[in-house]
Every structure is written in C-alpha cells, then in structure tokens.
Length: 426
Image (tube, rainbow, N blue to C red; front, side, top):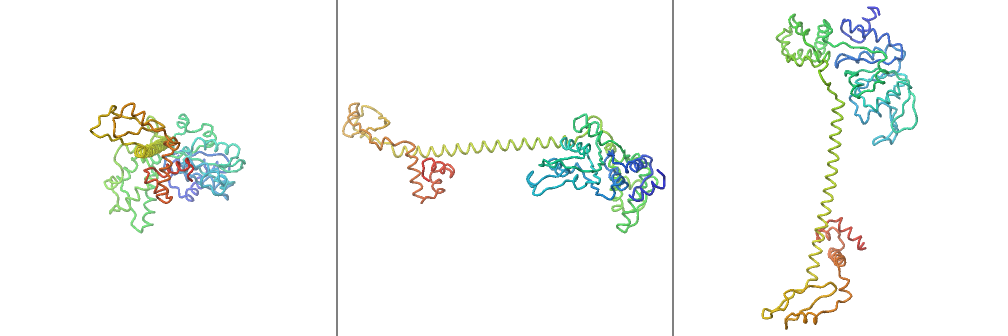
C-alpha cells in the first residue's frame, strides 16, 4: 500500500502512529476488505481493535449496507442467542413479538463481534453454522432462515488456550481466523506514545478551553518506559487527569510520576500471565452454580417449613379435639371418704360405661350389677363424630365465618376447609 493511501486512512479514522506493526495491520485490513473472508483481530484490551472492522466495512462492497458492532461479553448468556439470531413470539417469557436478531437485520452488511472468546459453547455452534452455510434458526422457530453477513471478530483472550480448556470450538477458531490481524500493544509502539499523548492533550485543551499540557524530556522518558497495561485507553485517561488536575502546564517527571502507577507489578498486567489464565467464563459458571445451589436449598427449606407447619397445625387440632373428648365423655367418680372401695379404679369400656353408687362399696359384683347397656347413639360416638360436632358448633357460633371458627378451634383456615370438605359441611 502506498504511503499516501495509508496516511489518508489514518486521517479519515483519526489514527495516530507510525509504528510498523500498526501500519501492517491497516495494510492487511485494506487488502482483505474487498473480499468476504472472515477476519479475526487479536490484541490486548484497549489497543483500538474497533477501528479495523470500520476500515474493512467502509472499503468493501458492503459499505452502503448496515454495520453493527456487538460486544459479546456484555450480553447475558441466557439472551445472547435471541440477540444474535432472533426469536419468534412466545418462545420465552417476554417474547411478545418476533425479532429478526442482528443476523437478520444486518443481512448484506457487516457484523463486528467483539470479545468473541466470551461466547457460550452452544452459541459458538450456531455461529459456526452461519459462517459455513449462511443458515440459522431463530429461538423457538422451526423454519431455517438465510442471511448474507460479513463477520469480523475480535478477542483479547488466548484462543488456543481456551480451545485446550474446552471453552472455545477449534473448528470455529479456524473458520474465523481466515485472515488474522494482530494489533500491537501500546508499549511496543515507541514514539507513538508521545504522539498519542499530544493528541489527547490537544483535545482536552480545545474541549475545555484551557492551556495545553506539554511534556518535558525526562517526562517523555518515563512515558516511554512504562508498560501501559491498559494500552491506549489508559494513556488517554492519564492525559485527561493531568490536564484537569495539574496546575502546571509544563509536565515534569515529578508531576507525571504522581499520575503513573509506580507498583512494578501493575506494569505487567497486560502480559500473558504465568500459569493458568484468568477465565471470566469459568467465574460466571461458578457463580451460576452457586446461585442454582442456593435456589435449591431455599426450595428445600420452604418444603420442610411447610411440612412442619402442617404437622404442627394437625397436632394442635388433635390436641384440642382430644381435650374436648375428655371433657365431654369422662365420668367423674366421687366416692365418700367413709366408703372404702374394693377396687381403686374403674375403667371406661368401649361401647358402654360403669355407673357407681355412693351407698355401697365398688366391688366386682357391684360393678357387674351397675353396668348399663350403651344406647345406639353412644355406640356411634367416636372421634370423627365429636370432631364434626365441634366444627358445627364453632361454625354456628360464628355465624358461618370460617376464619373466626378456625381461630376459636386453634387450627389454620386451610385445615378447617379440609375438615369441612371431609365431613360434607359445605
């Protein structure tokens, strides 16, 4: 690519820098733009990967069609399929209308999938089918849809490591990686750091009508040695902080040192970590597992509380009924002190009762003599009859008000309703 053409691209997209790695990335983007090949942009967070898809789209035959930039890491896992591939009405709660999704809306255009490494495995399978055949099925639909979309993806994670850990499909990686573009980190761009600082300082001065800050030579040296784990985004933030907070416009090394972290560990954040990389997807899965386990524990606790409450209500109701039975069926036997009984206790026998006379001792013969044959009404007297009578009395006393009757009986409304239905008192 000619130097003049490269400079025109930089001016059009406000790209500052002359390092060889940046120029190579722009050159590859312009060469692949006229094709429909998929592009995978690789680079650390904050290096400006979002510029490349715009360059590709604006210099392609699709430049008059729609362009969408989608951050895959910011869309919840439960809705990302619907966002990308659409859904039909009623396919899930809240789906009140049909939705074409990004692949439907961007037909004939370009989709930029940022942080593609954060896609769930199931969504990766859907994306692979779209890339290979141009076909997809909206959520809840049965009809296959067709689309013609150019895919440009970007990631800041180690895809090969993600593949080895089973977090990313290898076939999808090779399908996306038709044309790889590597964006250089800021620490490898040399004098571009100073050029970017000047640009951000000028923008702040123009926006807030203040004098532009200027770096001294020793301050430039510090700026060049710093590793910039946040890359261009971090440089812009620091420039804005200095422009607002510093009373001096000529920034020396001492002033700059106040705004740049001095912890040596902080300068290594952008490099590949030793050992196991941090996986935000694994953290999300762990969080989901904890939430599901917690939900299960809560449901179990609710069931146990409901069973305990039901048992307490039934025990309380049984106690009240037993108390009423004892008060209504027990026979008080009073024996004068001057009479010495032959037996000390007379049992109440089922189906009948013994009556005691106070004018003679209670002997075995006397007991047999005084035995009274039970009537038919007494034979029918059992727990269910007594409970039914107690319910009728409570309802009559409270004029049919079930809530008041339940309170008087010491049972819950639900237990009372169940007993009413059981005895046909409705």
